[in-house]
Amino acid sequence: MPVCHKPNEIVVECNIARMTLTRRDGTEIETIFDAEDVNKVRSHPYRWGVQYEKRIDNYYVISVLKEGNRYKPIRLHRFLTDCPTGFVPDHRNHRTLDNRKSNLRIVPQGVNLQNKSGAYKSSKSGVRGVYWHQATSKWCADVCLGGKRFYKLFEDFDEACGHVREARENIFNDAGRKFN
Image: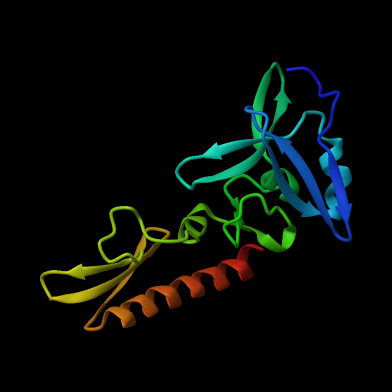
């Protein structure tokens, strides 16, 4: 892959930069990032594109880096944050085309997995981490992080949902203090 001679179009408005990305079918998608990162993004020698991720039904901004004779894919959010090995940049608002620093935080993969919106497709309750515990005839609130499971039984569905939501908020708040 040769060095890109036609860089992506970037427009700066106040403190936000908007970059136009072209899909393979020719349609255009826009990503945003902090204006202070424009020079860093422009210094990247290859063109930025988009990659659709079916499992999250969303797009990531992607390019390549040359390492020796090989090309390695790199995502814009990892490039902008200089994310260290063993950690991942997490999009707080789940919008993967929003790559502003205020929307990104560096966390372990386990914390990133907790920041998922909605329930799994197989969920019967419609709430991730809440299920009917048949043996006790109660609702179970279940959150797992770092191989540790935190679960509690409730008579009321709404209480179980509240417990899961609170547990995840605590995880995010702790992760933000420790890793961001």
